[in-house]
Length: 185
Figure 1 (tube, helix red, strand yellow):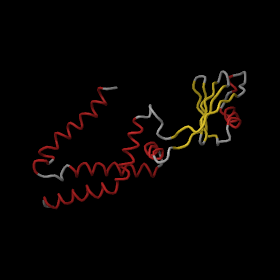
Figure 2 (tube, rainbow, N blue to C red):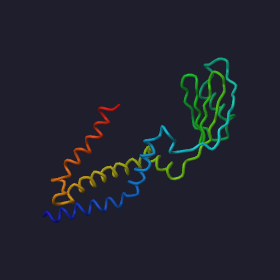
Figure 3 (cartoon, rainbow, N blue to C red):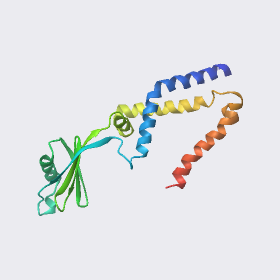
Figure 4 (cartoon, one colour):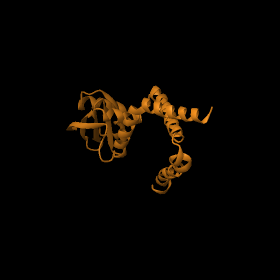
């Protein structure tokens, strides 16, 4: 293949793959920025209301089992119970659209009813989902991003080409992730 045909192929692949994935690139960019700041705010959901409650605990701690917490969950909320996690002296109960914390020494607790933030909440789920089809699509997306990066290196000619200018910008761009990975922890 001659040089002109290779340049045209690179340009066409770069452009068309970019067009195909522009929506996903924007969604991943916005939700990725939001997830970077997850210590400051929850980008997936917001609290609609919070209620306090108290459950009666058995005197014998060994009786606080998954079944006990499942039964207690039915008295706390009408939401569909999804499961629990116990850590130290606290249990976290998960419901379809709520979660509750229960102090396992006092029986005092609080339940938060939540709703998904429209659009942003769904976009952040894309980063976390383990759906098999989505994983395959994401893998193909990763290959497409590599293709865009590689073809982009060979589009420009002359003094702005990768060979003349782009290589050192690419090296500088690679240095920053390594600084964050190895030096700043």
